[in-house]
Image (cartoon, rainbow, N blue to C red; front, side):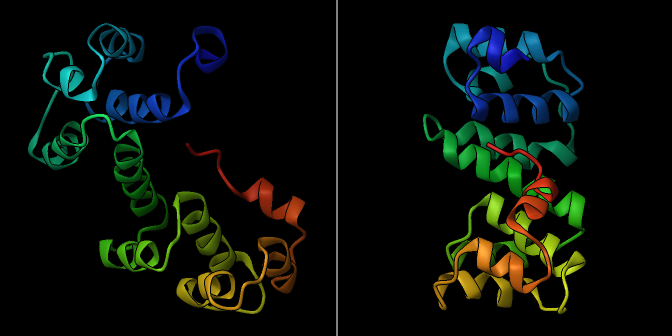
Length: 157
């Protein structure tokens, strides 16, 4: 709704939702600061966000990327993937090295968990990166149509 009404960029919305949740802050207030000041570094140093040892590493990572919003989105996406799928940092890092973006990592873990036959996430990703199969073909080989698979994928920036 905010994206449609206020012209909030999807990347900023994803980052904002994460920071608001983890920093116990008001999303609209964070986005107002971002609009006024221009960077997440300003938002995170504004005093509007509650910080803790648990959030400092992630918030500092978001703050230090400057104008490279895609890097901040990657940081947030990786945290959400770890939380949702309970996977270690190294697995995500390995998938990123193989060229996967956040949506693709989400997809390979969904296929790993819900698809038949059973394969590991990296093997599923390599079907795309090395065997050059489309995601539709990959989904089909796991007994899912692209439409069914799409319904499994959360919308991510």
